[in-house]
Length: 70
View 1: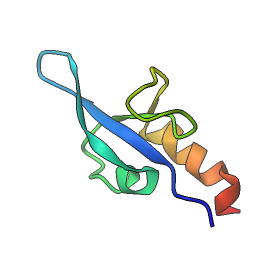
View 2: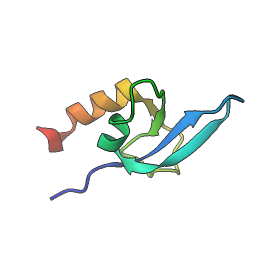
View 3: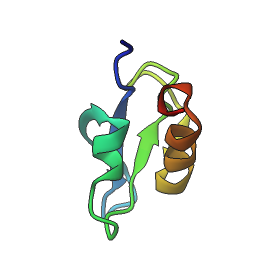
């Protein structure tokens, strides 16, 4: 059994800076309220240590296409 992908989720603060709000599974990130725009670290990279960021739609597409969801 494989572990669910962990991502670092961040939002953009009022000053335009990215603010990390925490580590969670990709599914938890996607369950955040729709009105909260966020970026998540790419699930295939180390959370918090990558500059590869995905928006909600791209993360959803990645999760939907993941072999563990087939």
